[in-house]
Image (cartoon, rainbow, N blue to C red):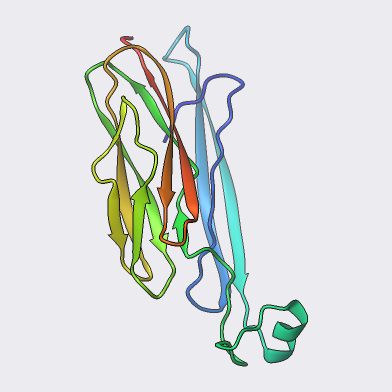
Length: 184
């Protein structure tokens, strides 16, 4: 849920993370509501329906040699889905308009597709008004973690920050944070 100003856009990241081979399909319904600022009683609403489809395939030994993804540990008949080990549910978080002195919380989903537990560290300390409760945490193998981000503005303004998360291999994932604070 979020608020967009006129001529503004929002990006929605979608990750396809199958656990086994097969065809997958999911339907999403996105609803937008246009509010005329001069008269809040009159609003227009629009609904868009999307179908997301994905397929995870089995890579056979011949194909592995052709594509160059074979390794000593892989054997014919193994299910291979190329994806990152550490995934984020979104690349950006937008907090809706907040009053000074109040707090909002939104969560991002951090997924660990690896077979081992993964240590994740926040490498860029967040500045006010954005806060996180923990700067280092573990994500169990093949599990997801809902990671809370807090927005606690003390004064009016538009705020931006980048949350950078690092996994042990050094790979860094970032989330753009934006929020607005207004008395009105």
